[in-house]
Length: 227
Ligand SMILES: C[S@@+](CC[C@H](N)C(=O)[O-])C[C@H]1O[C@@H](n2cnc3c(N)ncnc32)[C@H](O)[C@@H]1O
Image 1 (spheres, protein in one colour):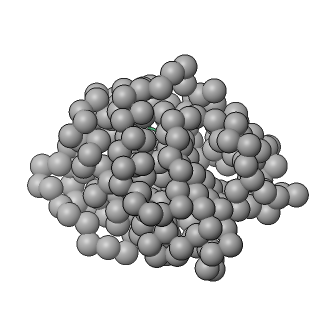
Image 2: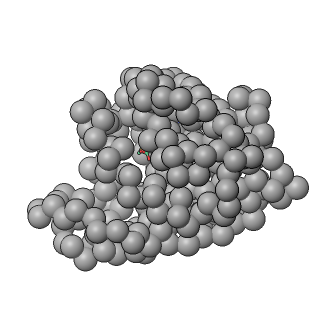
């Protein structure tokens, strides 16, 4: 278990939690574009830290899958995900342990969750237990100590997050997954979208900070479970 209990929402402000999905949509689109290798009709999918569930809804609408599970410790966000899923074959559950689902998924995804986990090695073992041999986990990570904006972001996110934040390097994360029995690959997210500019943004004081973040600092790991 990574966190002692569940929470109502991850962001202390429910309104900001509600706005997060729209802000992340261009990033999810890019994750899907560069990491989904083929049709998913026969595939089962896990989204770890799904919040209101938007990633799996987008994935299903673009590449219909057999079924999926999204887990998150934020109770109100998971309830919202269940409401929003419509007829899609997705179960959203309040949970922090993927292995406890008792399933073997073909693919797992997470977007900006690993920096909220104290024990990355335990997370790697948990994901391993929830993936079939040969299954792949694609994890997006911009919140890490090697990002140029991290010192600033760490303070800003700590004000809004209802749980602690951890300082992991890309090496720490790679090592944890390698030692758990995954092959490790990485690429920049290299976002290919126009992103809104907020003049005077606390997150991106200069526009070059934003350009560097989305083209270089924010990465996608692909961890493939070895047999
Ligand atoms: C920055 S948000 C990202 C949410 C979503 N992946 C997205 O792209 O919008 C991080 C999410 O991870 C969840 N989370 C944090 N620790 C978790 C844990 N141990 N198990 C499951 N979810 C967790 C939070 O509740 C929150 O919803």
